[in-house]
Length: 116
Image (cartoon, rainbow, N blue to C red; front, side):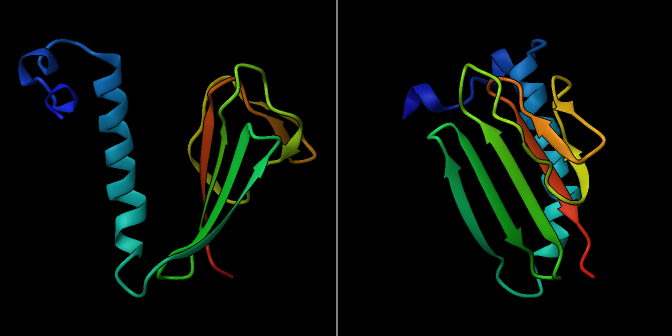
């Protein structure tokens, strides 16, 4: 437990992980939190080949939140790009005009899809 606590002295130094956490928390605050108040979110997930996780939530206001994550050291298989506006997307994403993509190793993409 003690080793998992943030050492604030180290947090004052430039740190790419700390910046990533700050960016993710900002995105959560900006895009997800305002949509949770209306009703509890619901969701479903699938795992492909024990490497790629796909999660789709319907948030309280009816907006879809989509996650695709590659937990492998290899690029993912070709898959359908999640619908909606990308709110977090890796630079190493291969995508084509037909709406398909491959995720880089250990990469994720988050998209937000407005309700109809």
